[in-house]
Amino acid sequence: DDMGQEERAFQARIDEGIKIEAKDWMPDAYRKTLIRQISQHAHSEIVGQLPEGNWVTRAPTLKRKSILLAKIQDEAGHGLYLYSAAETLGVSRDDLLAALHSGKAKYSSIFNYPTLSWADMGAIGWLVDGSAIINQIPLCRCSYGPYARAMIRVCKEESFHARQGYDIMMSLCKGTPEQKAMAQDALNRWWWPSLMMFGPSDAASVNSAQSAQWRIKLFSNDELRQRMVDQTVPQIEYLGLTVPDPDLKFNAETGHYEFGEIDWSEFNNVLKGNGPCNRERLQTRVKAYEDGEWFRDALLAYADKQAANKAA
Ligand code: ACO
Image (cartoon, rainbow, N blue to C red):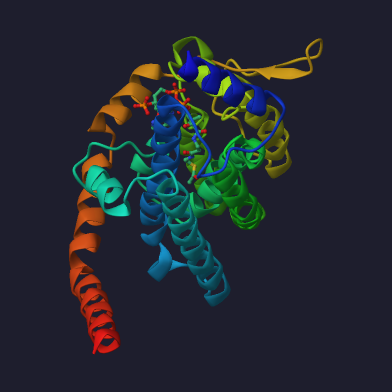
């Protein structure tokens, strides 16, 4: 039948590495899964500003404050970029935001943890943005053109974020024993949630097989998680800190670190909305949106006036 033929031609283009563009024919399910992933990604960037926003007024130096501000503003830009990429698929930003604000839409589990000390700014940049890079570099080559292209700049900025995070950790680890203890405490609290960012195990990942066939996913959740552990453990050792995992060991035969079991019940609980900060994050986001209503109204009033002037 026709549909079958269209779908086969679509898959053949993907297999050849040809990018799919907004106006190309695509299966409904491809469109749907991209809207799901890109909008969740956009929401994560926006909600991801909140844990770090908590420390802007308490940054230890002017230089640290301007770096942190720049980084948080980058995240806002990533969110807007990604909402635009999602809009190319025929959804409206208003609908996506409504889904976020009603608690229907997901965003990354990682942003539901609290930022208790300045060291958390180091741990987030280093581990969270570090993990985001590992997950997003392959997305620069994913099959959907607008998403892949958006990821290029996003990844460059994420590299700056990861570098500034590691720099904070370096300073703390070279500092007083109290500062080093603060760095260790932040690592202890952010390590496992960072591993959870990569999603459920491959065995439990419902979307992976189809997303791999469509080249939205070039590597599996577990592959990317392993890459993060292999890359980060030597950095932890360089800082003179301890990996908070008694089961961690290097396997010389495979060349990979083996690590302990992730607490999936914690992960699932955060996804269900019951993490330490889920409610607070959502409330803050909804309030920010409501507080911005006067500005959206002004934009619309201005646009109406312009249109009326043109018509006159
Ligand atoms: N936090 C919240 N939800 C998650 C997480 C997580 N860390 N990991 C997986 N999930 C959700 C999935 O969204 C999916 O839910 P859904 O079907 O209702 O949408 C469900 O758990 C099952 O997971 P998978 O089948 O593995 O889902 P998927 O194939 O979408 O893979 C992944 C998840 C790896 C996160 C993928 O969506 C992805 O690569 N997204 C783009 C990157 C991104 O969103 N990063 C945001 C955080 S980092 C940042 O940029 C600030």
